[in-house]
Length: 375
Image (cartoon, rainbow, N blue to C red; front, side):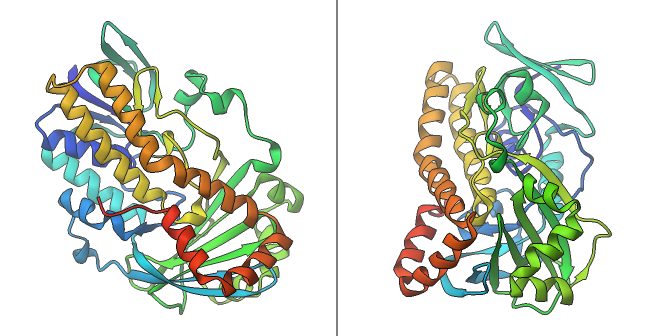
């Protein structure tokens, strides 16, 4: 089982990269540990910089009636409210819908996909990758790691953020609900609370909204359960209390993810090209993680195609990808971490919202620093 390209992880970055490489005429195999379609913990807001690229993958977003979002609302834990117009804006679409549309496109174009398949190991020898998945052996000329925020392969590769874990106060969890509520379809709201923040915006579907929040694991441990934490911490923000009390929740239980890590990551490990969250995770309050994953897949597919066509060497391929990735995303990641650090402190957040209301040009500047141009 020999392929030009092996993709480990079938999220946004992996699926879009696989599609582009197959479109360019290469043989592609993709491994995904889950069965499509499935839900993921995600804010489900995509910057409009990605719109044209998604359509280039054969997905007509108008068919999904995605809501266009151009208004921002940010509240402090004490209820102080900032409203702002988003010049670039974005749109909402669930990962259940988008990932399933992407995997359908990949199947149609000839990508070999193994669902419900966990990759146990990947190693590089004789200028070739060997992939072990469900006790089968696969070979590929290049390998893309798009396995998300944290994987068994991260541990196996002894990646730096695994060897040197972040302090306990920066150990985060994510919680997501889908809800129905009377809320503007053109607005994304970000409501802060002690040691965390919660986003709400409309997605595809009949009046469905994504409600997703990030907080520290310590916050959850202190209060014992998600429900108690919500009532005792999140509800201190009057906007969140109103949303939770008025919303109709479509999940019996929320989706959760733990051990979220915003530490620095290398875009290449053991000659594997890292894409999406595997290369670097931007803080959710920036609302740009999905666009970054898609953009990175476009960058990687263009450079990988040059390598597979023997236009550049492997060394040139890896150096060019690392350089281009850092040029496009390093500043965004840094700014995101700085903003999150400020919003992670209750009193600082209260003061910041008051200040930013008086300085709207600073809000524009911060949005531009964490976003890119159409690609």
